[in-house]
Image (cartoon, rainbow, N blue to C red):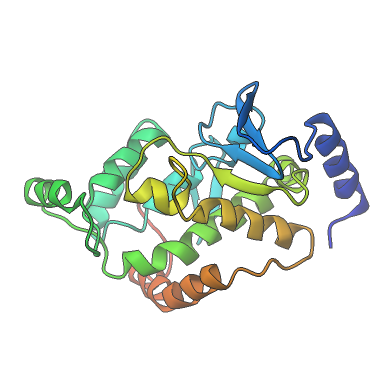
Length: 238
């Protein structure tokens, strides 16, 4: 369970940010989007909920390695070649890490595969086997680290109460619709994982059968990927 001090901070944050149902339409208030029972975020520069973005600049230590952002940590397992991983993580901005990683071909049918094949032929690499499965438990592990290691971010997440959390993306592609909702369509796995992290921080559980299936399905692939990185560590990608 959370400590009384943390609960007090969370209540104060909720009051300060007016986290409560508003109306049944998306409306912009300052830099964040709010709807009945929902909090939406997208850009890391938005306040206060831009902190929920994977591009938000806050270091995280995952699997024994420190990364500048969750985006760096998450994308670090996508390439199977450690030289490509080091090149990818050397990008000077989190957004460039995301852009470069999205060019890597997926191991599942996808319209972006054409672009991926071009990158593959030019750079001589491709995505780690099992990425389409392991990315779900790996993302959750990265998010757990972020909000557990930074109490202010954990408090902000707790302050959202029972509100639904949505990544309101602007790029209408397969990745955008997987992790968020774009033009009314999407799975919003990032928002759902944040809801799971919030429940964990508060000592509760949050049932999500579809998410649980994906987490379980990718668990073995994630374990294999971590072990393949020099015995379970992620050396060389700091």
